[in-house]
Amino acid sequence: MISVSGLTSMVVNAAFAPQIAVPASIVYSERPPLSQVNPKEVARDLLTTKQYKCFSALIGKESAWKDAQNPTSSAQGIGQLLDSTYRNLGMEHSESKVSQLVATLAYIHRRHVSPCNAWSHFQKFNWY
Image (cartoon, rainbow, N blue to C red; front, side):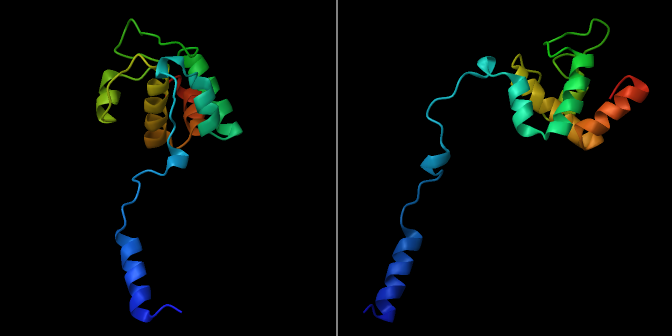
């Protein structure tokens, strides 16, 4: 039988024992470079089926999932975000389509809450 003082000592020792900062089960030892990750797959994993369909329709109209440059403005990337939009998000434009995807989803969340709301707005006004 363990005494109360022995139990207290075990609890204190366990509480202050060195802990791994990030559990090994969630650390990926190998990851592909972002340039090799398909942004459509990432979006499909992040969004519900309905929201992905709306998002895909929106991005299809904006850039056809290409890292496009708009010749008449500073809009660029798969989401056609302006330089000022990137700044407002605290981000910079990246060549990585996955980074562009993250920025686009952040913008959509701030302005429209969901991809389907953004798509609905785009259908009415031809911008989102």
